[in-house]
Amino acid sequence: MSVTDTKPALDDAADAELQREFDDILGAGQRIEPRDWMPQGYRKTLIRQIAQHAHSEIIGMQPEGNWLTRAPSLRRKAILMAKVQDEAGHGLYLYSAAETLGADRGDMTVKLIEGKQKYSSIFNYPTPSYADVGVIGWLVDGAAICNQVPLCRSSYGPYARAMIRVCKEESFHQRQGFELLMTMMRGTEAQREMVQESVDRWWWPALMMFGPPDDQSPNTEQSMAWGIKRHTNDELRQRFVDMSVPQAKILGVTFPDPELAWNDERGAHDFGTPDWDEFMKVVKGDGPCNAERVSNRRAAHEDGAWVREAAAVFAQNRTEQRVSR
Ligand code: BYC
Image (cartoon, rainbow, N blue to C red; front, side, top):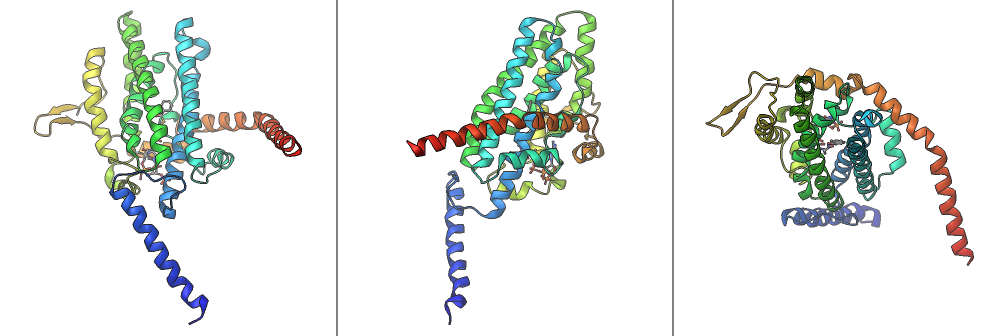
């Protein structure tokens, strides 16, 4: 047998050993780190999910950013500014986590702008009312926390660690949203109506954030087997509904779902079915604000070209100076 004949067999044996080590790490509930061997599918799935997550944070700055110049007081403006900046920070931790898998940040941004990578459906809805700032904090950040707390135990180390800090900041965001709404609910009748109108618009899109129902989710089973996801989309959606109903009672608002009711037998709330056709339309780029969100992101990327060029030249000069010293 020639050397080339034996090579595939050796590679197969080596691959099987690497796969066993990878499975053992997952089986022991430990983390996979950037230099560890990992199956290509695991790497690809993580890059897909982390890139989408990073893009969501960056695009997610736009709906609330819309109210920065019109916040009703200096205090509210400062709070909103800090929150929007936090989202930028989350995007940066996540792009860095994707880079540890070999993804390139510039390339991910181009893919987002060209519609080849997704971002969360929720950010394709408009924010016509100031109450939307509070409702995004309460419901959208609330849904994000529900989805992301289990990701702190995700099997990929850099992603899980990024999630710990993101979740701490998201819970702060959720509380500021709730506090804003509580203040409005204690205000005038017109303010209470604004809050209810906003809740009516955001409730169903918030439920869609968790992704399609489990029987239509192509990625969940494998992602759970790899420990990337810890719960299914429907499990987390249920958890979010159960968490939100008592909070709505405290606020004094209702959710626009006639089927929403406590089910004693299940020990959980029954609720209606989100409009999955609308979800698919939004995910495919045809939501109310998709074009605007992507066009703003494209403009920001193009406007920032000179900064990236200057930073690259600066870094190059520093390297050359160090070498010549
Ligand atoms: N929107 O098999 P599935 C934030 C896609 S940031 C758009 O269940 P998976 C915040 C999915 O990607 C919020 N697309 O997928 C920021 C897949 O398509 P591809 C973002 C969605 O990955 C600023 C297809 O549908 N959070 O909260 O197993 C201010 C089939 O789905 C959506 C994260 O990214 C959606 N809603 O599960 C305030 C969390 N749902 O990729 C707040 C991390 C599904 O096969 N990500 N799709 O072409 C995850 O946990 C999971 O990726 C998901 C989806 C649960 C979202």
